[in-house]
Image (cartoon, rainbow, N blue to C red; front, side, top):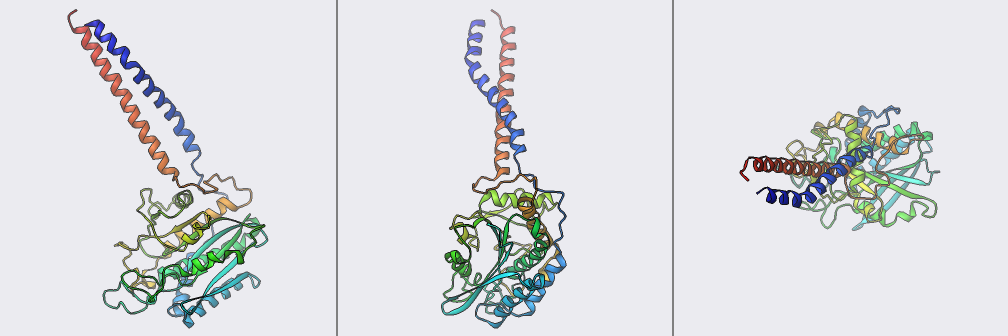
Length: 387
């Protein structure tokens, strides 16, 4: 009996040694992985995004009327952007990108900060409001005010332009503030405008992007899109078309500022067709900050007449604005010691990878302990058996 036990012990040793070795490797790897997690905040840079300014920009857009493509209110809104940027600097560089959809005149508006620099990061939002409130149970043919869906992202961009202009000489990147027309007229339960698709303006811009920069000397770092970022009950999703390492960095930056509820670790996931997709098709790392707009009890106003100022939160605007502000300072401020996910060219979220590694380590650790325990019991049992 003793000889049989010895043979079994010898036979089990290779597996035990392999598991022990793997446990040691993973235990060593975990600290290394944590060392490479983005340092999500450069604490030496104060944040100055003003939520009241952003809120007022929403109020002012709504006061213009429904910003439906082809209307005077849409034209007035584009002019409003120009006047606000010129109030920051009368010589603020901008381009009006005119195009048409089914014969309707449309216009994207592009502003450039630090145009003398070669690397470019795009901050984008759409500004058109939907022609019909197709999800409204009572008034589906009425237009949508578009306070959150359109005006909120645009408002954050205007305030970020003020913030970044004040520190422009300390930034090591050109920043584009890009306002898209004709994003929100596609078909959900019915068309916003019959025959129109989603993201008409951003596709038009992406298809003609060579007209807006010098491809021989300039290049794109990333594109960050803001859509429905100012509503009450803000909680961003992990949008699956986005480049995951870029989106994860935005999430970790937000959490580092204390916005854990708005940037949850176990965020809801979904793929959304939005204005970042055309830029992804060009190979530009792109991500969108967006909420669950299709089944969200905290914000059930998507494409209804209730998407109005009553359902806008100044705190949501601040969360979004300060997160993007910190993200830019982290990556493009001179002398920043930040270590992030740049160049944002992969689709593996670091936090998910860490969770996977820890899970594997726990499983292997439990296996090693179990094998040791069972072998110990078998050995003690063998001592008590008669020879």
